[in-house]
Length: 158
Image (cartoon, rainbow, N blue to C red; front, side):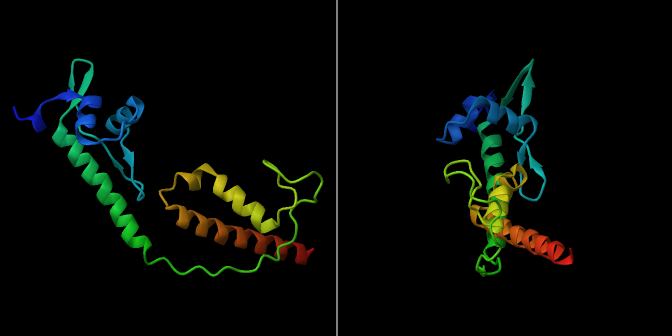
């Protein structure tokens, strides 16, 4: 058997392909649940079981890495055409009164827009959305602007 087609323990096969040391749980997840692509599909690392032990080949790891790289590459190509960002002045008003000194973990003194941007960016759904940092920031600002606009509309209606 050639080296690329020899069945090896998952960690050993991955170590022969990549220089980054991945945790065993990450490699197990690739084999059992797969890697979550930005389009919602999953790419799994091909495995064969020898008794209870999952094994894979160096070739299977290379193919897995090529598939997830291609999935990310297509996402990056699409994102290059993202519309330009126009930063609006923040006139949303204070979200919360200044009741304590500003510092880590406080929302005191933030504008409504800043508060909603921070809340959106800390949401796990957007953190694990597959978007780049720039896209997450753009999305958070756009969503925060929409929320502030809706709040202003509701305040004006009352």
